[in-house]
Image 1 (spheres, rainbow, N blue to C red):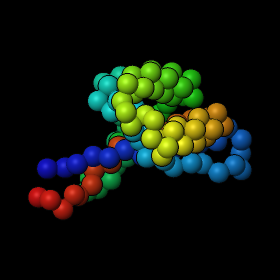
Image 2 (cartoon, rainbow, N blue to C red; image 1 turned 180 degrees about the vertical axis):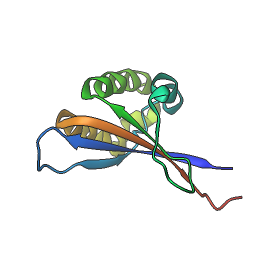
Image 3 (spheres, one colour; image 1 turned 45 degrees about the horizontal axis):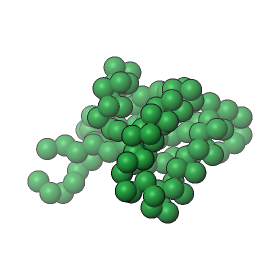
Image 4 (cartoon, helix red, strand yellow; image 1 turned 90 degrees about the vertical axis):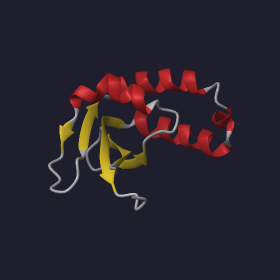
Length: 112
């Protein structure tokens, strides 16, 4: 059975600046994200796997992030230093981004 993971690419607004590649934020509701934005999936054309990309604007990503953070505040993990640091890094990177690409990719877990 295929397993999917997501990565997020934050593309900078200013030419020549580095892009950031991050794991899909833990505090984002994955199921709700794909319900909301799933119709935007673009097949990447990988010959062996079913991989997709989704494009978001910074405004959409900010709005989604705020919604998910509000819901995630009830989770005890929201206070872990590692999570707090990841949220701060996400905020700093998102402020400099012009586009956000979410890659959903199939990978082999080796557990079959």
